[in-house]
Image 1 (cartoon, rainbow, N blue to C red):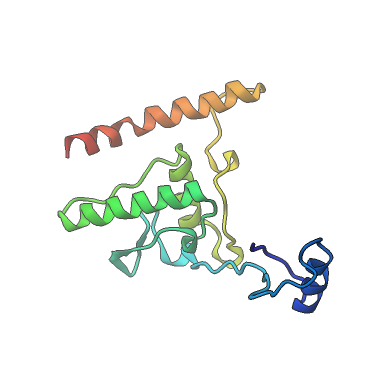
Image 2 (tube, rainbow, N blue to C red):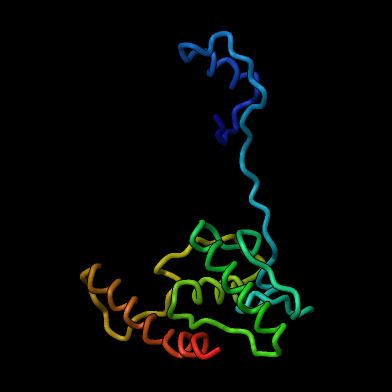
Length: 161
């Protein structure tokens, strides 16, 4: 079993031994708190996930300052796709800020760098809709529809290639 905790190892051992069946268990390794290591993306990366000082080098995953598995997968796809495009002499893709991964990559590239902290995907990153929609389901649907419309040119580009 594994877990994240700020408890000292002696306290972890004491607490775990309170669990029936673990009174005499041998603990190989105790839990520690996850350390979130990340790049200063606003100083280093473009929304294409290319390093500004070395455009042939790309970053992906949580080290870019994005959080969550879906963001890691999407960032990996974008960095990998852009690496392949660069290798073929093509321009890298920069996803529209109206899509969630586009909003997230724009955020990490453009956030104020003096207080930069990793960010998970969230609706607060997306540009506001032209009309205020109070109903959450309709509002999220409007975000989706706008993103899909704005992503159409990218889909056509990828299918043609």
